[in-house]
Length: 182
Image 1 (cartoon, rainbow, N blue to C red):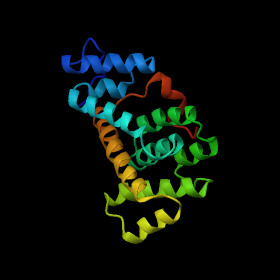
Image 2: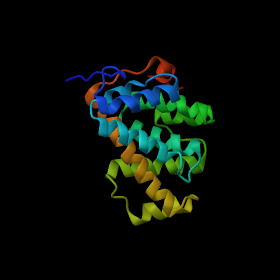
Image 3: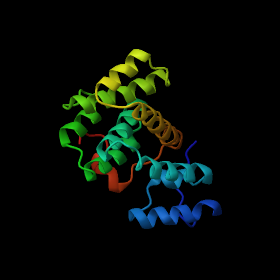
């Protein structure tokens, strides 16, 4: 069953203001937000989670690395394309982005530790061992960062699963990051 990507005009009334605000802020309306508008609470949640992510203690590059690592593990091409675009705008080095797209080792040991931890959280559904948490902490991260990873995985679970169910098409604005290592 496919879902449509709503516009502010076709969306349920409760989602229209959020869609208009997103379109104004971004300069276009991402298909994911249009899809989430079918359930206004899902749209509102994703938009609020996005705002909260920006307040994480991790850098913008690390924030996007978490989004990409979880999306790669969940096999979400839409989010890989979208966050690949955002990652470039926040200054993610191309070799890091290429590694994230291909699932290979990241050429920065601290960023590799973050990506591996995100992947472990996704794979284990949050049941990572104490030893694995200690390893993450030794890489230079904090207990706060452990919970920020859980937050990021929860956020990406919402969008990754919605994209899988809705078969959300990649926006033209993100196509240069779809299905490639860039």
